[in-house]
Image (cartoon, rainbow, N blue to C red; front, side, top):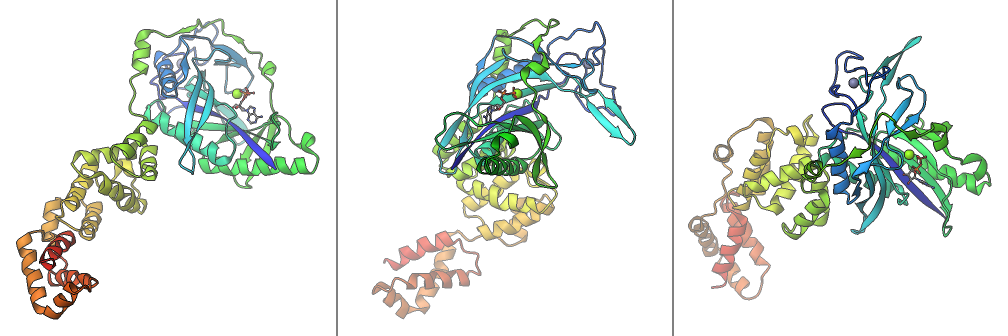
Length: 476
Ligand code: ADP
Ligand code: MG
Ligand code: ZN
């Protein structure tokens, strides 16, 4: 029996206005190499200056995951040659990073949480892009110098489920903090997966393999499953030492396998040394105050939803995983809608309908306050759930006044005691033997009376009211 060990390195592209060491914009540029200057082109004599906004955003993540935010951190040069890096080194933070020793809690299937240690999160500059066209290649340095936060986990995960749960939690957290778009497809949230196996009971770690740049949660899961299987087979075939060694592999989406890309460089290969152009990054009180301005985070939100709003844990986890969903829900509550009905109408009815369209929660044709208004009408018995579904179908197509729709579609429930009692009395009068039988103990007949009343009202009577009033009449 084997145990899997996983550690993750996540590169988050920070959504700062300008690059990490110069004032070039990070926004999209129509032309290649237009968002560049002597610093990010690495022209001789140009000096880097650290971007304060990037430092504050790194610090904010640090505070959010209960890490040490280091008040004097350092930058190092990592040497390597590649055409997309004109300086032939990357500025990064090797041993004295701005954020150190944090923790992320993941939710397991059994309802408990597991702590995953975070080794460090360091600031570094992204490279440019090589574009290969036919017989030649071009270099675009618009992205060169964009700030990245590399978040390195401890090797604390024991299976693919935990690895994906960790990634999702981190993804959700950086989006709540608004420090990154964290768009996996566009590469602003990329992850490298380190995987090893060891026989159960062995304390020493096995040899780790690094799988680079996997751009979806689904692929992370698949790549881990494949790699674990490959390593176990090598172990069982007695060729572990030949087959499993420190290397970088790539996930091949088409074939569903990992493939060797290159032998893993040792730290010494990179000739790390302190960057002489950059002084220590000193954190000021003003930066701390700004970094500490943060919204309610997912764990606190789930706790509040379950304890104060009495929402089921599972539903709370679904709602809080995405800030857009949580904020939509909270806006619904502001209209006075009940939490219980809002959860259902948001997660089942609205999300179910959105899935069939090109819209999502961010640009939903039905706004949060509109859906809240609709739910309030169910809460107070004005309309039935069935009627509300018909109205929601209309609202998906066109924004209309809810009261107007209730009128024009004839969906108002009769909740007025007098009107319902009139129907009930007529039903009871027409069925004297059944009333006798009920009073004699045949309680099943209650359903019959409810059915007859609803039928006589053509479905417009509020069923809850019918139940209440029938009970009252029949107990006399
Ligand atoms: P490097 O700097 O060479 O990338 P690190 O020591 O920074 O190496 O580790 C990188 C990642 O690999 C970390 O996330 C760490 O948790 C993980 N890791 C280290 N050892 C193992 C192992 N034996 N199995 C799985 N993951 C590991
Ligand atoms: Mg590393
Ligand atoms: Zn620049």
